[in-house]
Image (tube, rainbow, N blue to C red; front, side, top):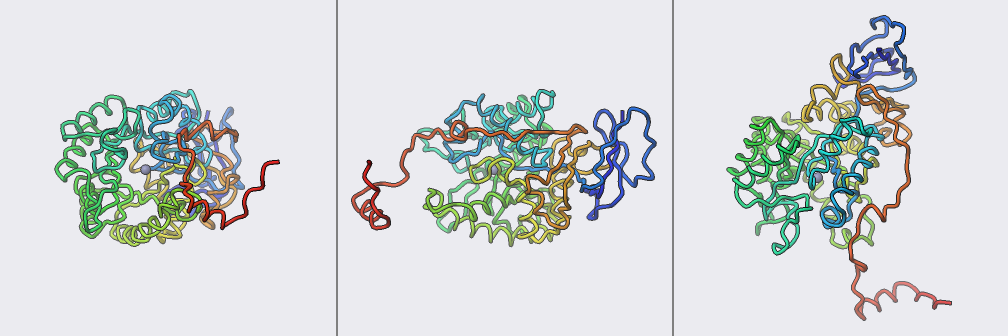
Length: 455
Ligand SMILES: [Zn+2]
């Protein structure tokens, strides 16, 4: 049985324009047989089915290369690592993966994970147990004391339930990579820097150039992709020279980094949504605000935008991903904001942003030659939208806009479902975020009337 999809406008991801009066045809396995003008379509036979999206904009399913399925809308690092068992995190991650799919994202990369959460979610969906997006799974970040995810004091280290795996030698790093590959990951995440700086403010790389090369070489030798967290110039340069496939952030890249990226083929996932949400949404009562994070994020963002534009102009691919999974980037809510920010802040046309989130992202994904564009031989992963994102890229964020989402030719319908966030995330023991000295109490009492006495 074939399925014929009549499309009002069709954006295949192969070009910048959408075409009217097109039809796509896919087979019983969800593989596209035909994409083109309705007149040229194969003849329908009895038993074939027709989907009428003649009033809709049809495009490839969106891809987010930076959605952390293990995090659970985390409010803190402890929340990511400590308070809920891995089994609960996996179930929660599956629920949230479905929310991301419902928002039009038919594939995601989950880069950095405790236990075997994202690969278990991937396998459960792949086996047909649940509806959900295609998942490209990583294991724990490989890190050192200078890298992200080693965020506790040295006397605690990185607990077994943490998303970080501390290694002390390159031999240990290679052993961890081999173990994760045996477990079935699609990519290896390396924490190439964190928050430690030199006197001059420069972020230090967590690994040396040699160590980075050893890890990336082993990852590639085993047929997997390498992903790195790198904000500073040094880590970005090491990642680029080593041929890390996808470098997240890279705010402080320079000409040397760009040259190395072009030589080895590294792409950048600038990840605009997390900092922009931090800047735009963090309220004054939040600890993040009191620590000055919005201001810091703003400065880093401005530096990043100038550098990412240079990298793009030089020919480095930029991929869309959001760092979804934090309280500031809850699942399915803001994944499409990344495309709007590519347009607003990086100067992408809406068509270029759509292509970044589809065919460009697909180049990184496992099985990426079967997704990302609507062409014969590829999967029937597509969304039908009520209006055109080429006219207004913001429509992708309208919950009502993704009128239908198909993965491998099967419609994914995820019912909106209320849940109790207090039972899902943040089981922290902290009760106060202020310290009530006499001076502080006097200050507070000067700000607002005393509470009325209890009746
Ligand atoms: Zn991340």
